[in-house]
Amino acid sequence: MENKTPLLQMKNISKSFPGVKALDQVQLEVQTGEVHALLGENGAGKSTLIKILGGLLVPDEGEIYLDGTKVDMKDVSSSESMGISVIHQELCLAPNMTVAENIVLGREPSRGPWHLINRKEIKQFGQDILNQFDLEIDAGEYVSNLTVAEQQMVEIAKALSKDNRIIVMDEPTSSLTEKEVVKLLDTIRGLKQKGVSVIYISHRMEELFSIADKVTILRDGTYVGTRNMNDVGYQGLVQMMVGRELSEIYTKPTVQPGEKILEVRNLTSGKKVKNVSFSLYKGEILGIYGLVGSGRTELMRTIFGIDKSTSGDIYINNKKVRIQNPQDAIKYGIGFVPEDRKEQGAILIQSVSYNVSLTRLNKLVKWFQVDHRQEDRLVEQYIDKLSIRTPSPEQKLMHLSGGNQQKAIISKWLATEPNILILDEPTRGIDVGAKKEIYSIMSDLAQSGVSIIMVSSELPEIINMSTRVMTMNQGEISGELTIESEITQENILTHATGGINNESEFAKS
Image 1 (cartoon, rainbow, N blue to C red):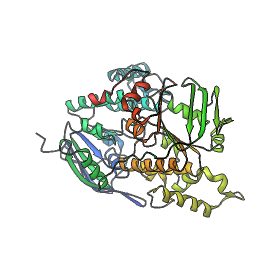
Image 2 (cartoon, helix red, strand yellow; image 1 turned 120 degrees about the vertical axis):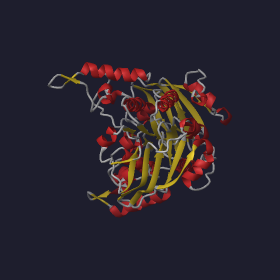
Image 3 (cartoon, rainbow, N blue to C red; image 1 turned 120 degrees about the horizontal axis):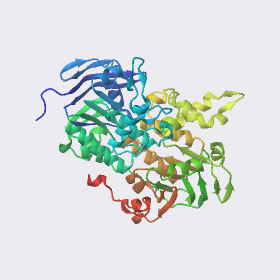
């Protein structure tokens, strides 16, 4: 039986930014020991709502209650003092500090009248927390040396190391392997048994149905409703999110791939890419799948000239080329949408117009000045072509939803008119509606003759969007699936794990 007084109540929360009303009279009610999913398309207002709960933003209107008592979340410290911890989608770790130092940041153990910090004690505490969650990470390692997935697990461990009543997780599994996801969901079940409430934001429906008790849906900054997870199915949730029936989201191109456009021969780079050879054909979507650490991203960075190759050759249209930097790659018709769009793919504090036209500045500058009329035409063309939802081309990219940010980044590379487009995790952290739009864009590009390399951790994406699949394991190509009937979850995982049939643990959990 539920408590009569909820642990958390957020009533009539409203918040506006320049040109955008992010939240309009939104409600959220969470019980003690409840896993409460918060669901909605990108731009629905989920992140804004939890930033208000975490003290990062102050609402224009509305009230927050804990145990029936009105509270003032005026800043992060006040939120944390009330036992609320938020794991934001954007990682908030200090890269030049150790893992242990990040875990205890702001509550470092000290001794004596001078409050001297005990670094040995800090490292031991950090390692104990990591060991508690079976994380194979050295507490003395600098965060800058960790992978994105490892940083995500450190962020989660940091939050769980505190004595919290409410933990908010915003897309916590977006960078995690399947094994790490299983571990995290088990941890959440343990928190629930201890009476800790978890607000869980994810676009992965299978996770929500696995752990959530209730779900609150937002749409366009407004409250749609709250449902028991046992009473609503996948289609019902999607319809509440988008306000309409959602047809099949995947749109694989129907044309047959053409001639060979790219060939990589015996490419080696550092310790992560080892003697890799493969070909790419005109108008195909080559899906690349591998577990974290398999070398997928490093291979793409090497092809694009970000990382230096130590041996091997690259051929474009049967001609050997030398790609020493991204400028060379662009010259040879290659575009690259990176895995981390916020850090590597975009300049969030700049406008949509600035970001979309960035790769074409050399063509837009005349007599040492940008031809703004030509720039405006270019930007409007891609805003229209990719349906980027923005109040104005001058809107800062940081104020757009994740899906619209991603479309702006793709536009930036389409503006170079590439023959080859590399997409590393193209739909990470974006909602089902935005995914459908991205898939449609990819299919249209392939149909028009653009060759796409899609690196993805999402098996449904790999299976349903790839015309051919290549797997990687420990820096090497471990398999290739060319016939549609062969492109199955079992076959992909078998090749990606080096021949071991590592059937989904998540499905069993």
